Amino acid sequence: MTNEQRPSFEWAVERGKVAEFARAVLNASSAHDGPDAVAPPTFPQSMALWRSRTPRPEQDVGREGLDMRRVLHGEQEFEYVRPLRVGDVLTAESHVKDRYSKEGKRGGTMTFIVSETIFRDQSGEIVAYSRGTTIQTSKAATS
Amino acid sequence: MSLDVGTERTDTMVEKVDRAMFVRYAGASGDFNPIHWNSDFAKSAGYPGVFAQGMFTAGVLGTFLTNWLGESNVRRFRTRFIGQVWPGEAIVCSGKVTKVYEENGETRADLDLEVTNADGERKIDGSATVVVS
Image 1: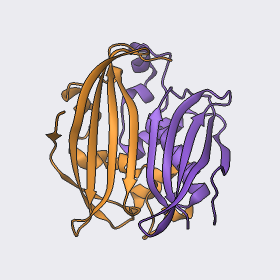
Image 2 (image 1 turned 135 degrees about the vertical axis):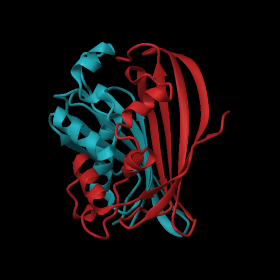
Image 3 (image 1 turned 60 degrees about the horizontal axis):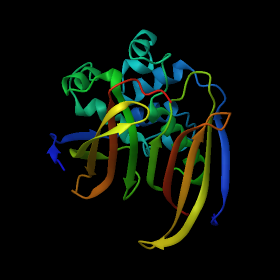
Image 4 (image 1 turned 45 degrees about the horizontal axis):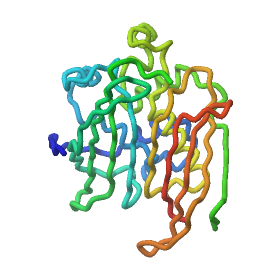
């Protein structure tokens, strides 16, 4: 087990981003438009903008030692105490929960990186969790 | 709305996925891995071409779920990525209620979820917990 902590960062749930994200996942519901809009269930994926100040955050992946050609998303889970809404200003804390390797059928030797992000509201209450597994493969993983 | 164990639904969310969807999702999410929009890069990685971000397809599955059971009711949403979604493929989403129970003073339902293409090849399997309102 590892428990690598990353710097915490502020993540504001913004009206325009919620509407843009909803359209990108083909969601036409009016619930995602307006000053009280609710965020779609996978919306925390858009926090990349807030995590990194670099203009090209995709290049950060390379700096973290992952080859973009060999990175796959294995699993993703979101857990909500309540839905996220426009106007929420959350504090996000991420840490790597686990790292391990195994032999895979599709991509050769695979390294699994399991990370978790915890979101707290302005009063310090936990409102949501995001847990993801990233896989680095030793060859292209075509099924 | 009442939900019973065994209640099922299937929707074809996209007839043919296209690259503009990957580009729009890249902008909206901040996932700019070029493997999803740059064919030369995808080929240099050993793939036949670009393919959808897993979280694009998972996001469409989320849209299927919230269209069906409400925009504010999701308590848990989990996806496991099984195979790439290629341009031209369909995104067919389905869900089935596996359990209905009381927790934290609310009625909740657990569901199994799945994404396939038009030929029934699985791309994502998933699960969710929703509040039944």
